[in-house]
Length: 376
Ligand SMILES: *Cc1c(COP(=O)(O)O)cnc(C)c1O
Image (tube, rainbow, N blue to C red; front, side, top):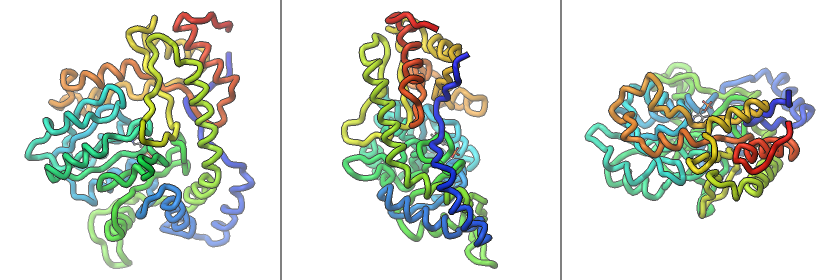
């Protein structure tokens, strides 16, 4: 059996570079609750990402839940079914009704032209996702939010480091959430962050992620435990030092796929945004009707050769038992998302993926396309 190729793999800096951080944690005995590395990572990330106010979390899901709490969002929120299930779960955990709107056939993000038709008197906010790091139509979404008085929370779990017209994509909307899970391009094992617009809001978020505590005797509300610990924060600081290598490694894999797969009939390459940088967080190809076999046949062929490509995002969130009974979950309301969820296949991409292993993946895809005979 060929060696397993995962869909992604965290970048692990040399262990001996991490030991000095651990030594300091052992020395200080400060392991969590806003220690030195936590403060340093917040500062360093602000600088690296080009944002002003960031609050670290133990994961992105808690950051999403806390963001909705901080903005007191209630009623209905317009969102996309084409995402990781945590996006909608964060609404559910706040007792908010998700209203699914279809996606754009090219960018695969929430289709801004369909938002207005989904607004009701109960609508309070929009929760779009920058899927695969491709920025949403942030200008159109802002116009609609301003017109109807809605808040905007971006799930930016895939959009670490992405800039649009030179400006961080995290600057749009009222708040944005990043994920630092081990499968994301920048990771702290588990982790996340909430980006907001002003210092006052950041202070409230910092209280909310620590049970609502302001000081020993003051609790401002029903907070939660969403804190990032010192080991995670230290690992984040070390990862940041390696971001150039991580970015270069991913860009190399992306280029090689594009060169090898560009003329395959029926296979669509991931779209390239015109005014934004790319972080190469995913490599989602689409196996369309013009390809000789189905997406699942390609997926199975890769699996047979121990390549763990993933069908992100299939099934749609709106198809899971918790959500499929909602009126907006009807397939007739989501034709584009339904079609794309049966076409999309994320090929492995990570800095340590060798050219040889990547060629194994490419050969299997080309063989399924009927373009080569692959020897195995
Ligand atoms: C990974 C991911 C999340 C959840 O992140 P965690 O840090 O694992 O909680 C949320 N939304 C999207 C779009 C994701 O890809």
